Length: 322
Ligand SMILES: CC(C)(COP(=O)(O)OP(=O)(O)OC[C@H]1O[C@@H](n2cnc3c(N)ncnc32)[C@H](O)[C@@H]1OP(=O)(O)O)[C@@H](O)C(=O)NCCC(=O)NCCS
Image (cartoon, rainbow, N blue to C red; front, side, top):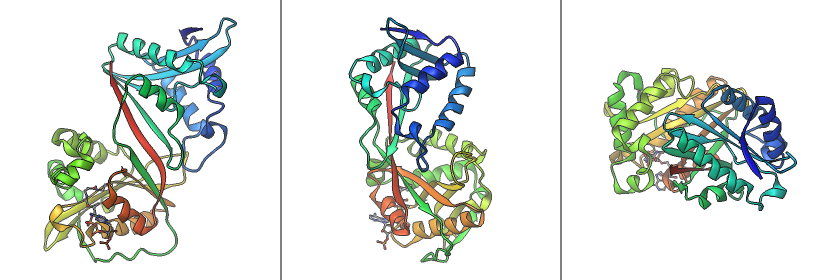
């Protein structure tokens, strides 16, 4: 077996398509999941950028055995979804392991210090095969997340509270960031659930996320989708929703962040913020609402399931220092 970098887009596309043929979402369209069209388009864009790594493993006759793509973003390398791509019959042959080892070596040579991979798969399925490869190469797995979805029907949601709210934009980015830290990283229970997610537990990272989102990074988000809840005129929690520009899925609203200050919990504020948002998303022609949270976040999962959300995907972030 030899492993080479791809010579051309056409060569890589053909090899990758052959190796992905047993992957369920590549074979047929699955509701809300990745799709062949979406990933081919992403691959085309990534191939245009010179720094990215595209490896092809082949046998002595030149037949393709597997492929691996890694996006390079400065000192970070991101393994493409569900890769290394290896046909089912070759998965015990060591091709995937060799590709991954070679990918790590290439990435290191290009100055990559940290390699990451994301596994997102149906919540009731086994972890994808490539997850075992990452484990074998000592990638660390962060706590798994759960993604839930709700079909927005014709009826109005009736929140238990008639909440007074203000737009998030009435507060500074630092003000909203301090709300995030207060909600996600103050009590020992919240730190146990969210403590390893810097985006909600570290001031600098959290503010960067807020700025990115306010700049449209997660999608369209007018002020009626980003609200701060008030109790007796004082902030008590917040919600931030987005409508991603996604040509591959029905129009949906993403609940980006929801938090209620610890001292205001279990009074119906969280569920009211979500229900008010669902009514707004419906007015904006969204067919679905979508949300992700750590699998250990029972409070949030109960809240969403109480409204009617159902689990759809599990998500695991893996990383390795090079
Ligand atoms: C999750 C969170 C937003 C809930 O806010 P809240 O205002 O306390 O929730 P509500 O009072 O509206 O509760 C609605 C329902 O959610 C569920 N729920 C809320 N907190 C719960 C808890 N601690 N344990 C179990 N179920 C809980 C219950 O089903 C509850 O209904 P009930 O009170 O009639 O039993 C809040 O705990 C929080 O800010 N947590 C930290 C940040 C976070 O995890 N955000 C969600 C990320 S997606």
